[in-house]
Image 1 (tube, rainbow, N blue to C red):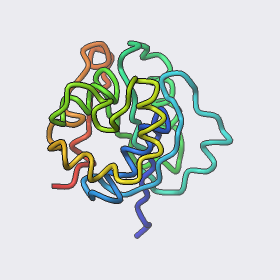
Image 2 (tube, helix red, strand yellow; image 1 turned 90 degrees about the vertical axis):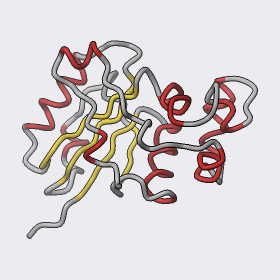
Image 3 (cartoon, rainbow, N blue to C red; image 1 turned 45 degrees about the vertical axis):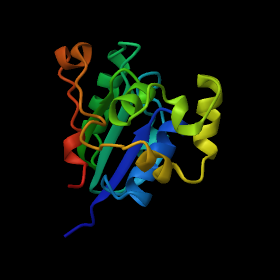
Length: 169
């Protein structure tokens, strides 16, 4: 039987840092490769598709704050037509990563995780933090609350949050 592969497409470096921490350090989600690619703003190209290994489950992690569904739907269609893609899993970050962190941790703003002075600093700081798993644990991170909401705009378009498929219980 062919080896299963998992590929996460995430919006930015801060999302990649969180996904890498959840899979490697905390072992809360299925391991796989995380690559920065914004499926809300960009359309997958053939040169990107040929790098996908056979029998790969592609996990699209994206913010819902823009309400733009057209390119997400186009990317899902492109992936469905790719012979190497076994399954596509969508994870809607309602409305964005920062809100997901507030919802799943005992914090009032995402900046509390990194002790950042502003949101701009937070984005920089979270990428550079070496102990994100420890910081998440300190703030009572709850994987059950993380990626647990559906966005009504995306849901109407048939795009549901399927995070439960990659969470490790």
